Image 1: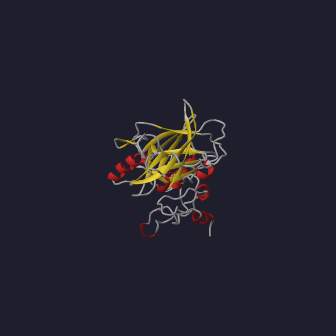
Image 2: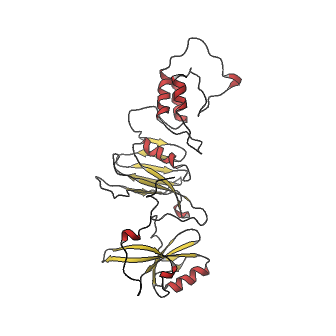
Image 3: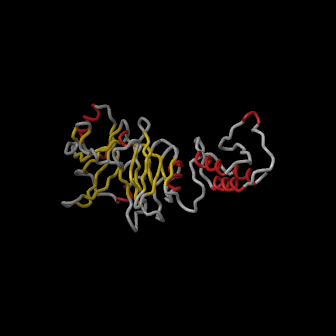
Length: 308
């Protein structure tokens, strides 16, 4: 087996995707192709008028540097440059590095997560990307960046959406390019019917009004009756207040079963749990007992599970 054949075999398409994974083998192959001198005899056309295809097909040895460049563009990579690219695009996302941030445009929120990681990696950002179920209003949004252990700096980290946007999502990402902490991004995809939405995506944007119905300050019994009238299921969260002042309120929530909730307790807010279920955040009333340890009450989040 020749060196080129071995390098061709190193290029493995991503499972379930029509786009090939960008691997070291791609770059090695392009270097070898450019460095290979053309043979002295003329080559005939490929049998049956065959065409050059990507993937596992065998390439003819006679190929020019210009053709190699065209192949690199076709598979979505650049020729080796000795460092991260300043911009990168594939069928799912495009990223361009500016002075103090990265411009991100998402075109296919349902794409394989590896397409997004491929693009971030190309511009020098080492992040994990999860394609996660969200409410219809959040489809295509870039969620994060999230540092599960807590961002320690230096610098700042965040995402800002940009409007108007001719694609599904346009935004700016700012974060240190050499950040050593684990960083996770989410890309919102349409949830299946009844599939739970992830938490933390503009949960407070409409915390009082449920399609014109105000929930804050009403009893659990009243809100429950209205939601049942609308054909919606209900989940319950106890809302434990740990500190309150004029500027902010510190709190955490605890997921509980319906039998932990009394009819006359007061609803503070809600969130859409899925297409057919609403979570009510209820202020604990008499008989609720002491507040639990926030660490024990916490539920696993989408960015904690990095398996696929």
